[in-house]
Length: 290
Length: 276
Image (cartoon, rainbow over all chains, first blue to last red; front, top):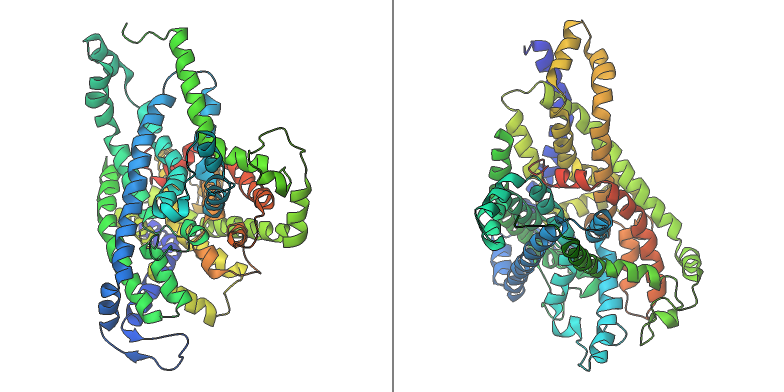
């Protein structure tokens, strides 16, 4: 019974959230759009002038932009590959009966709670340092040449650090989904002589499809804007080897004070993220109905 | 039966799982160990694992030289403050959408979710300039507001999925008995909603504690929380690994403990209820 009383109450209770979010989204976004059409440098205040789409042309033809797009995609796809394959394997492992399952689970999910600046610095210094790092010592002990991770494989190093943080997330989601799998179905298949591989391929994997999709979409949203890990390890370098789109826009705005150029980059980033968002919204929307 | 759970099989699986788990956990363990070493031992080759002179010195030095307590306090204020602010705004909205849904409810929820997809860099420039003009750069108030806003969609969604599970008949029964709006909330809804609100709060504190885009870009010395404080150790002059480790250990341990209690909420909150 939706009386006018409850309808008015609903409007009143919803208003603060909706208005605040609308303001948080619309106002800055409109400003970004507006700035992107200006020649606007913080070092030359009062010299702003309208330049149309010049900033976009400039940003899109900047070699750093192409590098940033490639790096952004490599980073997202690399971390996704590691966390999806690793997460599925780990979830299958953790789903088995074992001693100390609770503690094992706690150890595995721990990295998710480590703040990005800590994980980046710990990995960069204490593990990946070419002289004093633990990996260097292991390599030497095995009679191999230590790898200078951030000089030789900078983007890969960042992928490893970010993947370490997101692996627990993927594992946890996939494990949650695994635990809702009907064990009778699996046992019936095993009775009929299905091996572990076909049970996984025909029963487990289809059941996990939704969880895996959710992992892909949510991680993508976060991974498109990886920032802190890059800032504290490589600062985007060497050259533009680890500059992703988020870092490029930050550098353009707060290091080069080019508000117009950075805003054009921001608009491009929003468009890219929206392409991903469309898929996620549809997906969650379907789940809402079911 | 095809999958007999023999003790041998269980032992083998346990061994593999423990090995993998310890490898994944190792960077954290290594950080904690290093925090108790001297700077010399921290960089020594071969590395020392357990047999070194354990010392608390780094913890004392970190506090003395860098005013660690202040940054920790900033983290607490930002994460707890933004969570409370977000809850204040979100609870009424989630409550009315869960119990008095209209034909727009689904669209509003979807739209809120979509705001979460907006990449932060898309609005970095205007937010930075507005903060500069309003004198909000490097202030706790400014960051509390930003954190509350970026987590608001997650908070609304999480609360909504929890509230949805409260049976509506109870509310109707209360209404039939003539309970007014406020009585409805205080006596009927609140007791059933508290666990969901607590879970939401927990997850949101964790997310805000670890957020490292806005905190790095909008703070300097004064309002910097631990994320930004730790980042200051990235300067290349000298290697202070033992002190870095001590600072890091203090920064991650409290939230790690909270996180361990929030596994379920984490799944639910970060998947917007799509996986429970």
